[in-house]
Figure 1: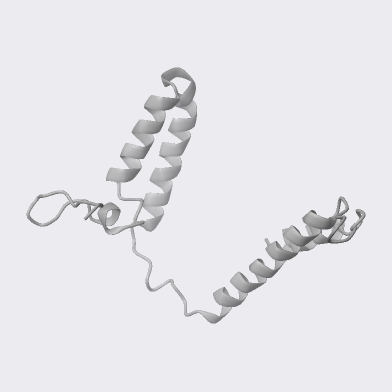
Figure 2 (figure 1 turned 45 degrees about the vertical axis):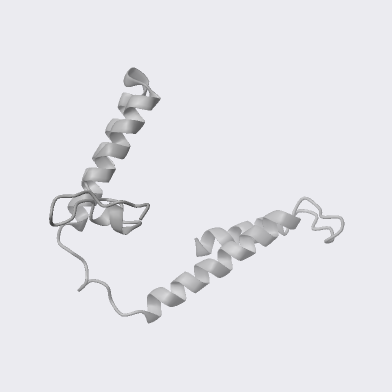
Length: 122
Protein backbone atom coordinates (compact mmCIF):
# COMPACT_ATOMS: atom_id res chain seq x y z
CA UNK A 1 0.00 0.00 0.00
CA UNK A 2 2.95 2.25 0.63
CA UNK A 3 4.18 1.89 -2.94
CA UNK A 4 0.65 2.17 -4.32
CA UNK A 5 0.06 5.42 -2.42
CA UNK A 6 3.37 6.88 -3.59
CA UNK A 7 2.81 5.94 -7.23
CA UNK A 8 -0.77 7.18 -7.15
CA UNK A 9 0.34 10.51 -5.65
CA UNK A 10 3.06 10.84 -8.27
CA UNK A 11 0.70 10.08 -11.15
CA UNK A 12 -2.11 12.28 -9.83
CA UNK A 13 0.34 15.15 -9.43
CA UNK A 14 0.62 15.18 -13.24
CA UNK A 15 -3.07 16.16 -13.47
CA UNK A 16 -4.25 19.75 -12.97
CA UNK A 17 -4.57 20.27 -9.21
CA UNK A 18 -6.78 23.34 -8.99
CA UNK A 19 -7.74 24.95 -5.68
CA UNK A 20 -10.01 24.07 -2.77
CA UNK A 21 -12.82 26.20 -4.20
CA UNK A 22 -12.25 24.99 -7.75
CA UNK A 23 -10.66 21.54 -7.63
CA UNK A 24 -9.05 20.18 -10.75
CA UNK A 25 -8.89 16.61 -11.98
CA UNK A 26 -5.92 15.74 -9.76
CA UNK A 27 -7.22 17.28 -6.52
CA UNK A 28 -9.09 14.31 -5.00
CA UNK A 29 -6.83 11.56 -6.38
CA UNK A 30 -3.78 13.31 -4.92
CA UNK A 31 -5.34 13.75 -1.48
CA UNK A 32 -6.71 10.20 -1.40
CA UNK A 33 -3.34 8.76 -2.41
CA UNK A 34 -1.62 10.95 0.20
CA UNK A 35 -3.94 9.58 2.90
CA UNK A 36 -3.31 6.00 1.70
CA UNK A 37 0.44 6.64 1.82
CA UNK A 38 0.29 8.13 5.33
CA UNK A 39 -1.89 5.30 6.66
CA UNK A 40 0.47 2.74 5.13
CA UNK A 41 3.38 4.48 6.86
CA UNK A 42 1.48 4.33 10.15
CA UNK A 43 0.78 0.61 9.70
CA UNK A 44 4.42 -0.04 8.82
CA UNK A 45 5.55 1.83 11.93
CA UNK A 46 3.12 -0.14 14.11
CA UNK A 47 4.23 -3.43 12.57
CA UNK A 48 7.89 -2.65 13.15
CA UNK A 49 7.48 -1.47 16.73
CA UNK A 50 4.99 -4.06 18.03
CA UNK A 51 6.19 -7.30 19.57
CA UNK A 52 6.22 -10.37 17.36
CA UNK A 53 2.88 -12.08 17.03
CA UNK A 54 4.30 -15.45 15.95
CA UNK A 55 4.16 -16.79 19.49
CA UNK A 56 0.50 -15.80 19.84
CA UNK A 57 -0.74 -17.50 16.67
CA UNK A 58 -2.74 -20.67 17.02
CA UNK A 59 -1.95 -23.77 15.02
CA UNK A 60 -5.33 -23.92 13.29
CA UNK A 61 -5.19 -20.44 11.83
CA UNK A 62 -3.74 -21.51 8.46
CA UNK A 63 -6.27 -24.32 8.20
CA UNK A 64 -9.11 -21.84 8.82
CA UNK A 65 -7.81 -19.51 6.11
CA UNK A 66 -7.47 -22.39 3.65
CA UNK A 67 -10.98 -23.63 4.44
CA UNK A 68 -12.38 -20.15 3.99
CA UNK A 69 -10.66 -19.80 0.61
CA UNK A 70 -12.09 -23.14 -0.51
CA UNK A 71 -15.59 -22.12 0.63
CA UNK A 72 -15.32 -18.75 -1.14
CA UNK A 73 -14.20 -20.50 -4.33
CA UNK A 74 -17.15 -22.90 -4.07
CA UNK A 75 -19.44 -19.92 -3.48
CA UNK A 76 -18.13 -18.29 -6.65
CA UNK A 77 -18.68 -21.38 -8.79
CA UNK A 78 -22.09 -22.25 -7.31
CA UNK A 79 -23.46 -18.72 -7.51
CA UNK A 80 -24.74 -19.13 -11.07
CA UNK A 81 -26.43 -22.54 -10.80
CA UNK A 82 -27.87 -22.20 -7.26
CA UNK A 83 -28.61 -18.48 -7.26
CA UNK A 84 -27.56 -15.59 -5.05
CA UNK A 85 -29.99 -16.02 -2.11
CA UNK A 86 -29.28 -19.70 -1.49
CA UNK A 87 -25.50 -19.42 -1.99
CA UNK A 88 -25.22 -16.38 0.24
CA UNK A 89 -27.37 -18.01 2.93
CA UNK A 90 -25.14 -21.10 2.90
CA UNK A 91 -21.98 -18.98 2.98
CA UNK A 92 -23.18 -16.93 5.95
CA UNK A 93 -24.35 -20.09 7.71
CA UNK A 94 -20.96 -21.74 7.21
CA UNK A 95 -19.02 -18.70 8.38
CA UNK A 96 -21.30 -18.32 11.39
CA UNK A 97 -20.96 -21.90 12.58
CA UNK A 98 -17.31 -22.32 11.62
CA UNK A 99 -16.61 -19.37 13.95
CA UNK A 100 -14.61 -17.32 11.47
CA UNK A 101 -16.37 -14.25 12.76
CA UNK A 102 -15.69 -12.87 16.22
CA UNK A 103 -17.16 -9.40 15.99
CA UNK A 104 -19.03 -9.81 19.29
CA UNK A 105 -19.53 -12.28 22.09
CA UNK A 106 -22.51 -13.88 20.35
CA UNK A 107 -20.37 -14.71 17.29
CA UNK A 108 -17.32 -15.86 19.21
CA UNK A 109 -19.29 -18.08 21.62
CA UNK A 110 -22.76 -18.80 20.25
CA UNK A 111 -23.72 -21.33 22.96
CA UNK A 112 -23.38 -21.04 26.72
CA UNK A 113 -22.23 -23.86 28.97
CA UNK A 114 -25.81 -24.74 29.89
CA UNK A 115 -26.75 -25.11 26.21
CA UNK A 116 -28.85 -21.94 25.85
CA UNK A 117 -28.16 -19.62 22.95
CA UNK A 118 -26.72 -16.21 23.72
CA UNK A 119 -28.88 -13.25 22.91
CA UNK A 120 -27.23 -10.32 21.15
CA UNK A 121 -30.05 -7.98 22.23
CA UNK A 122 -29.73 -8.25 26.01
